Amino acid sequence: MKSNSKRGSLIEDIYMENVKVKKGGEFGIHLEGLPDSPLRIVWMKDVEIDSVENCYEMDYFENLNLINFYCNGALIELDQ
Image (cartoon, rainbow, N blue to C red; front, top):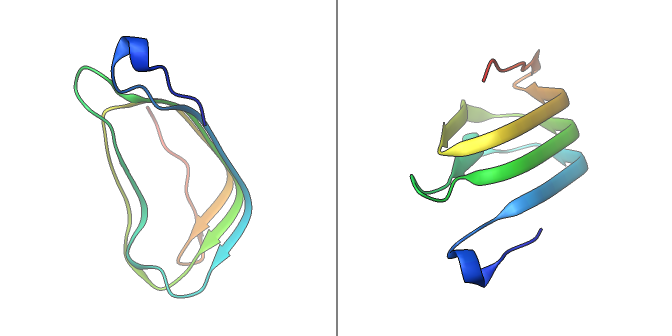
């Protein structure tokens, strides 16, 4: 993860791989950037999250990449 304090709150280059969650709770993915500073370049590869109420809730993000991402047993593919 990289941030740049000169540009304000900037979070980018987030990478998660080989993650397994058995009791996920409320959300599988909860990404929330800011209107003037969205989360950028998020990769999630080979992720399995089970027992969640909602597979995702996301606002203010750019370039989300889900590769082999499963939520409650279903493959998740998002249109951005």
